Amino acid sequence: MAEIVLYTKETCPYCDMAKRLLSGKGQTWTEIDVEEQPGKRDEMIERSGRTTVPQIWIGDRHVGGFDDLAALEQAGELDDLLGVAPHAAGSEHAKIAIVGSGPAGYTAAIYAARAELEPVVVGGLMAGGQLMLTTDVENYPGFPEGVTGPEMMELFEKQAERFGTKVHKEDATRLDLSRRPFRIETTERHLTADAVILAMGASARWLGLPSEERLTNRGVSACATCDGALYRGKAMAVVGGGDTAMEEALFLTRFATKVSVIHRRDELRASKIMQDRALHNEKIDFVWNAAVDEVLGDDAVTGVRVRDVESDETREIPVEALFIAIGHQPNTDLLKGQVELDPVGYIKAEPGGTRTSVEGVFACGDAMDPTYRQAVTAAGTGCMAAIDAERWLAEQGVE
Image (cartoon, rainbow, N blue to C red; front, side):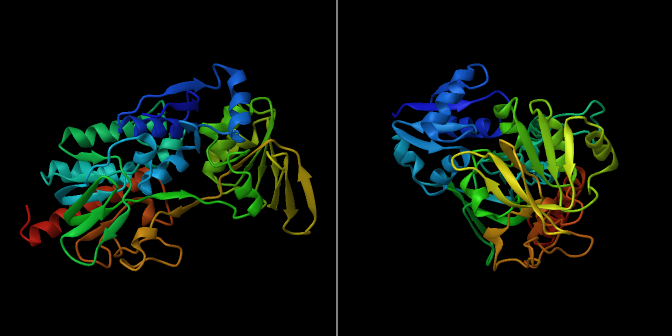
């Protein structure tokens, strides 16, 4: 087998996901912690041209980060690169298949499992959803001292498995909802199901600038938890004005000399408590009524050019890291043409319920909620979807 080298750091959800994917294929690797060995960060940047972790080598090939590793897996190319013998995809049938994890998917699984419907969760390579990238969750009931997102999702998963849920940490690559039983494919298996619950969540939205794309992993990131410490002692910026942006900015003050929050309005959308924390943090300053026109730098971020949305004047802000926190878009590309979506891509469900335009298919969580998008509301709709699916299956004579 090819030698695998991973440059990582301790608090890095994407590093953990990469290791989980490789471990599932029976691989071992040499791990280099760039925080414990600061000189290795320079070595990583020189070898890869990137400043974010993880950076992965398989043999002589620089794969890149977790997203690049996952793309190889989805394309069916990773096994060949690892020298793993190909195997035929397994077949499996479930009464209820849940596509996606996170608070919605795992809650749906808990309720379906307690109803003895033996659910199967296709949780994705990034099982746990957006909370896997969240530092502190303070507004979920039952955690008076707060809890990290990964810790909370681990508890959700264990509770679902306790009642008999089977969890596959694989990405769905194809769904066929045109006939029953419904069909779900991953790189590892073909799954059929009598009912499907869609809990596919949402992903970070990017600015869409060519310079942003060019400098991603070279100072541009959507995960302060993953990459903030790599820019210790540097000036940084966060784009956005909601809770996620404030959380990122506050986290980055642990490492940055200064954090500039760039927001296109003259007031924040974040909750009052998050606003107060950010506005009273001496390391955070605010660039109001501003939009990012360009990310500056050739091989790494050196600054951003912002435009005043009222005067149209531009100015440059010197920073060495830029974190994007401007909201999310639903992960529903696999559903296009199969279930009814709104113009943005959110799944349309019946008012007050979780039934979609396809009989036997239900939706929950951020993939169908453009309004609240909270862990607690996602869990609530996961409960609703499981109950709706259970009742529908009973009507079909499936118990």
